[in-house]
Length: 295
Image (cartoon, rainbow, N blue to C red):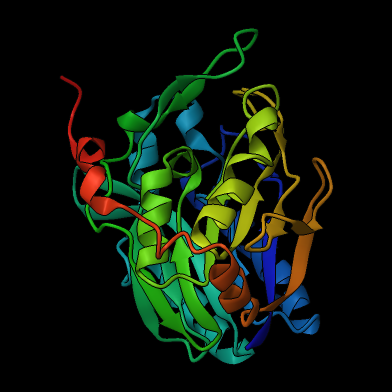
């Protein structure tokens, strides 16, 4: 199957002092315009960035952001994106802040098929609590906002292939990336919010390596801009697609709004996997310590 896949790396245009409702309205309006552009470019499957409907609010610890969370799939944002997906015939990966019940929240991506049907969700499994740039205030205070995901590593059968999702910090843990492959993923998206000086060196190493080890395509997506008032650093973009051999086949600019697209032939997965027989040569009987905690 030949598909055209896309990534949207966009800046957030409001500062953190605006109301939650204003943040959502502005971000959704901006993304809808870019989604329409993706449709004009015949994109079949499109991934939005981590927590797309606002700023990266985990730069601070403030309970007011709990109000941003929505139910999935019954919240307004996912319902809106279902209508858009159906209208455009496009698969959408929609990462938002999820409320399961009052006080229980997840960093989640909803997956919507090209007919508008809701296929399911992936909840971010690994939750960081990491200082940002030492020269700046703030950091990645995600444990204040998110419970670790409890849905495992699902893969979704869409109109345009078998799609997996791994969210931001998850990419540093190869175990889940392997499980996505074992579950049959052909294309894995990693919507992220990562800053310059913090992850640049890793950005084009880890995910191509994951693509090689598992024989699938990866779409690595990073938001862009300096978000106020926290300004924890530059969300630098440079989103890209890589193939099962780890080659970057399409990439975006640094710190500019952009739609990044790649023409993907899913048939090459068979060629890559038949050459590198990593699934044949696995030794899961020897990997027990990986699933055990530290002594």
